[in-house]
Each structure stands twice: as C-alpha cells, then as structure tokens.
Length: 200
Image (cartoon, rainbow, N blue to C red):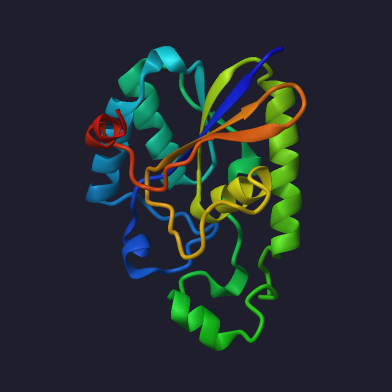
C-alpha cells in the first residue's frame, strides 16, 4: 500500500482577514502578522516529514509557501491552480455581514463560484493530487473556504465542527491509501512550536 499525505496549510493573515472581508480571488497581501505566522509555521514543520510544497496562485498563499519552502530547504513551490480560493464574484471586498445582508442567497452571487462548483473542484483536486503525488508527502498552501470544503468531503461532513473557524496558517493533514482519503490530523488553530509542544 502506498500512502499519499497531504498537508493543507492555510495562508497567513491579511488585513482583510482582520476585517472579515470576503477575499476570494482578490490578490491581497500578507500583513506583518501573516508573515510572522508563516515563519512560525515554517519553523514548526519538520522537513524530514515532507517532500515538496505546492501552492495556490494567489500571492498570499504563494508568499506563505515560499517562506515555508525557504526555511525548510524545499524546492520552490509549484503552483496548482485548483488550490485557488473560492471566488465570491461581485461580493469580494464586502464584510461578512454585508454579504449576508445584500444577497438573499449568498450561493448565487454574480460572478461567484457556487458551493456545488466549489465541491466539484475540491473533488477534482483530491483526485488530481492522489494521482500526481502518489506515495509523496505534500504541503499544499491554500485558503479557508476551499480547505473547509476539502475537510468536509473527506470527513463525511464531521469537520470542521459547527461554528469552528480555521485559523490562518493552520495545518490539517489528509492521507490517501490507494482507496480513499481520510483525515489524519485536524487542528484549526494556527501552527507554531508551542502548539506542537501542547499536543505532545
């Protein structure tokens, strides 16, 4: 049996994260806290446990991936377009409460990606990675909405738990055993060395 291990690392914080603004495919930058979070996550990652880093094409993810790769002496991250965040269409830039107030159905925003489409893309991503990186250990830097859907698919709807937010730079690990994906470890909190000590 050949195991494929996928570490889903959310990008570090941006100013829009602080304001609870919908970022989607808008190319926002990491702020100082986000850069520090990426560095902390990189320091907490054991390079002996991973083979490579891939990333969403959005700059907040790419910068996070590059910090992780440089710290751990991985080759430069490879861009995987399927890791991009869900598009929220014309709602991007709105605060969460504005989005809910303005659209009676937040799943039908002009120019946005529906949840059905997002789930289809997430399933395609899982299938693609299981084939492309069979037997490898891959850190994939991505985004909150997509990671939530990936976790929900693989956990049969159990994760994330009701009302639970995924912190910036959190790391959740999935494993594929030639038959199906399953959740190896779930941790919605931001990855750093103190968190690893707490888990020991």
